[in-house]
Image (cartoon, rainbow, N blue to C red; front, side):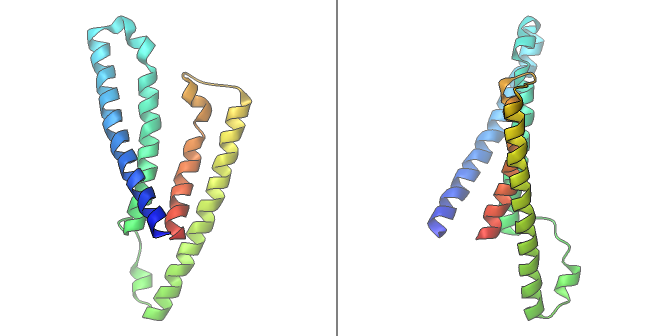
Length: 148
């Protein structure tokens, strides 16, 4: 299991890096295109939507890594006052509730993704049909962290 999780972590880190670099280059190129060749700027406006889409993935994949490393924001005042045994059980209870909530959100996100895809509607670019897939990314990442 540890080998699989280390591969997932490496893929996440490389994906985050690629998304950040790709977003920066894509948006910068869009700004340059608008200034240098405004006549083709409307044909490349999809870059802005793709950048926003990538930013959502970047944020929520990054949240999974911060959760795993314990660098997320936590309100530990109450738990820190508990004795060690109770602290351990409280921590497990929080993890279990978080896992259940993340699993519910993953299911809900999947349902939204399928609904949007099956509706046949799309907005400005073809990736809009799968916009709901970001709703699956967030909780699925959190579920994988809680499972280890």
